[in-house]
Length: 316
Image 1 (cartoon, rainbow, N blue to C red):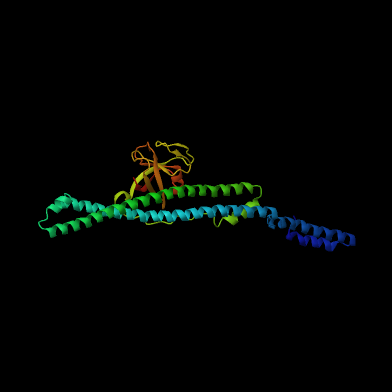
Image 2 (image 1 turned 180 degrees about the vertical axis):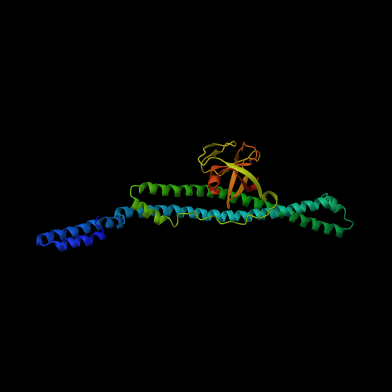
């Protein structure tokens, strides 16, 4: 390679040359040397370009990924709305249960022995009528409280089942996004320029948005109270059948517990994420652990290892 520092010596050589032919040969040599010296620099500076065919393939791959991500975002939005609704329903159920419990305690303290004894204790007809009206109103109120509790429990069950379905869809959608990215990387592995173009196009929207943290300090009474327990988990690719006879797969929203009846719905919270699961198996076998989270629950919560979780029973 000819460097700039060598040029003065070459020029001095030219000056000492007397013949025209020698001058021309030397001039050609200088120009050629300069060009040879600049060629590697040009080769280094020139960026690797993406061909039109590769550019079209990149665009197609980006569109595929956008479709998968859009579907995943829609599922996550539905999941967030349904989860928020479940919070409201559980609070409503807790209030109805509290009202009914208060009424039962009041009847116990008052020594209420039934309608007939209360009515027969009236000394006048007017007192009899007053007691009848009071008992009728109380009976109507009790029936309304029972009805409110039954409605709230039914709503909680429907909302929980919707969450089970949406959570399984969300777990699948996350895997679909990862599979699409892996597919594109494999497709463009032979062309580093195309791979870089794909990565730059998808990097901005590459991260899944963090879940909105809802108020986890909510204090509820009754079956909806938040408690803490230690959980382990199934493998993400586990496939088998639970003790309750239910088929368990990679996206099953189930949980194993040692004593809770099969079918009980439990909501878990870990790392700011929540997931509803259905008791479908027995376990864990290890002492000191309360739950084994199913493969789908693991995906939704982003859970791994053995950790303390918060949970509440939605429906027994």
